[in-house]
Length: 280
Image (cartoon, rainbow, N blue to C red; front, side, top):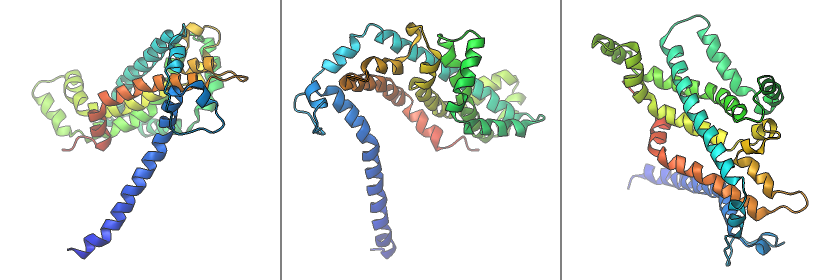
């Protein structure tokens, strides 16, 4: 037996055990959330919580779906998230192509500005954005949620897609032009499919950010509750004097399901997108 392999094996076992421990730590809050959704009220309010239940109940989910506005909140969240994903992906693809394939003044400055924009905390811009949305008459509309999320998702998406576009050999572009392809045809029929895994990877982050947003929804949707999203539905079950923790856990579980479905649908593309770009 190779002695070097014996030396490496303990380190490999340690790495696998560490990865498993981290996975358990990350998954435990999700497990506790789902468990709390199925626990009866007596067990949730017990002073001695247990990590299991012998009497699962659907009462918390029943209270969630009996809320009159819950379906509207779900549709609003879905509309906001899908619009942000599609718009940010298309804009980021065109912008990444422009800063990668074309030479123009202040290109480096523009890229640095994208990077700096990622460093600004969202909380620091909430108040200025509130006044901006008020001046444009977008308060209490889904547009006040869509526009900021598109703006905040673009810098990361452009930086990530820039690597994918740059990895596409210029020889492919030259060959397409020689064969008579126009610039728009090369852009959408050749370049777009090649960088599509990168678009999927950036879309996942855009979808999660828009779907789970609470700060903008709380700040910009003030009086028209018909324009609220799912995170705002949690406030229905949280009362300072008597919070309905079962309802909160059940609503949070329902909110998580579309994210899991989205991950399942784009799983293969996501892995290839995070694994790297196109190679010559």
